[in-house]
Length: 118
Image: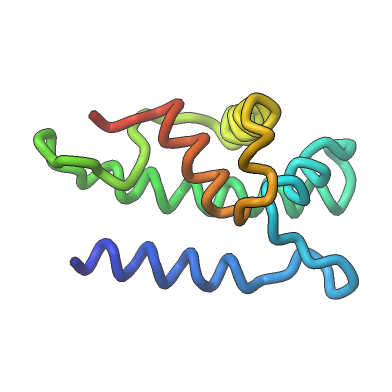
């Protein structure tokens, strides 16, 4: 129960942070556009920071997953931040139906599909 509360709190905080005061980034589509910017650009830095933050939380949760958990929240393995961004972009481009979903849901789904704990 404490782990779920932790993830919900962190996701809530991350979800409320705009990437830029003029351009709020809320959807998978918005995050994809930022992640496609040149790697030295501020939008890409926001993309990398957001995905790596969600990924770090999922890695933390995955590290404590019991082997027989029904549906663990988290990822297992040691992906790099670059791999996380590439995985998110690949997932998003293959799942256009989720482009209007919240960015956190998209990142979590992409990373959990790629690095499941079960």
